[in-house]
Amino acid sequence: MMKPRIILDSKHFEITVTRLCYQLIEVHNDFSKTVIIGLQPRGIYLAKRIQKKLQEILKKKDIKCGSLDTTFYRDDFRQKELVPNATLIDFIIEWKNVILVDDVLFTGRTIRAGLDAMLAFGRPNDVELLVLIDRRLSRHLPIQAKYIGKIIDSIASEKVKVEWKETDGADKVTLLSND
Amino acid sequence: MTKLSTKHLLGIKELTADDINLILTTAESFKEVINRPIKKVPSLRDITIANLFFENSTRTKLSFELAEKRLSADVVNFSSASSSVKKGETLIDTVNNILAMKVDMVVMRHPNPGAAVFLSKHIDAKIVNAGDGAHEHPTQALLDAFSIKEKLGNIKGKKIAIIGDVLHSRVALSNIFCLQKLGAEVMVCGPTTLMPKYIHSLGVKVEHNLRKALEWCDVANMLRIQLERQDIKYFPSLREYTMLFGLNKELLDSLTKKIIVMHPGPINRGVEITSDVADGSQSIILEQVENGVAVRMAVLFLLAGRA
Image (cartoon, rainbow over all chains, first blue to last red; front, top):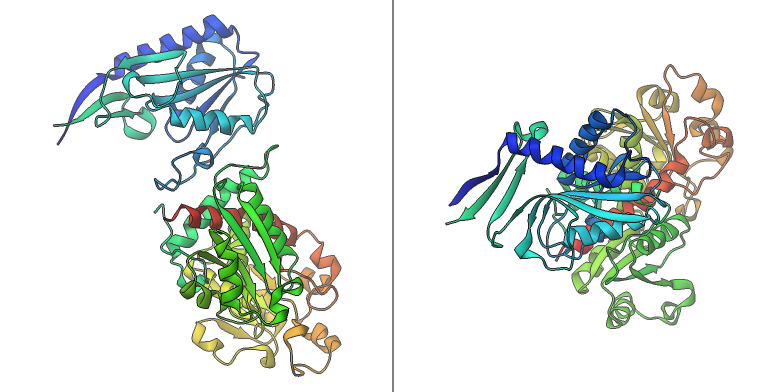
């Protein structure tokens, strides 16, 4: 049976997202040369949340945020059944600084596919990775995030579930383990 | 629903409504892909596809080939005119020889109805039917459905009239199956001689008056008169056919609502449809062609994903 353990409750969730935003501002100033791209399906919620928060903090309305689907670039297509989601990038990423956003960094394979998928839209100046949860012990590829909400040590059979106010009723991160 | 219920695409008849919806949803993603600056994705880079065309084709062949290339598949082309088929080689021998060269999927057009089904029973590769005689042309029906859905938002409850040479049309049969499975009402319209005998068993309305059919429908799919398949005279003259069943601007403008005009191509301009209608604002003929690539990418992608 899966036993849930709360990693982030809604209060800490909010604090974490706010901290990530200030870390981004430290590096990217007013975001005039920076865009945010959330990875489908679950990274887009974090990307949109960060976009909204940045717009509040910086008091500007034009922070660009897109969504990118990685299905056609995955290496486990044919092993898993995958259904593509929408890709919407209505801005130019050429010579921009791109912040790739996903909810959980696990094996790194989604990010690898995401990097490939993103290059179909042009050559960015610089790409950084932001994740809410970094499961640091389970990487299959040499991929690390620059901005991390929370690092957790978990084994592969455990599951991290990120829930969002918009779709699940509350902001929450839980760890489900098999025992 | 993330998986097709079938290993091959032999006809729409074998698909479920879920299969069709999965293909259409996946095609939406591919339509976005083919409008990117870089139109190619690496999904099928380990797959080799043979396009076997035993009958002439421009659109379908090009469309499949582009779809395959944009999925990064390796492609080999074959057309019967320049092959050993002319020396008397059988279909199974031809295909087995091609498969011996390690081909994973076969896209085939053949003049004989049932050729794709026959092949699927004897060959260990995934088969996509690109038209078999007057039987089925599943990817055309799927791209037609995609185009209607894109234009009208939904297919359920919509009224679609298929007009012209229904008897010789694989597009008509596949469209009827596809649209009915998606919940549309279908009418066929044409001269009695160009209606198949079994047409009533398909659950479609039959109309012989073009104006009545057009007044009824939301979408008119104009079929080509297939003179090459007409072994006997089915109507007195092309001119008479055009007068009774040809769609022209005057007729289209006199209707009480604005309908959508489709045509699977190739067009006999001035026969079943006049140029000003085919190139006019209500026509989505070129959108159909664009959507064809996206829909075929979806079909190949989903079939390749099936173990």
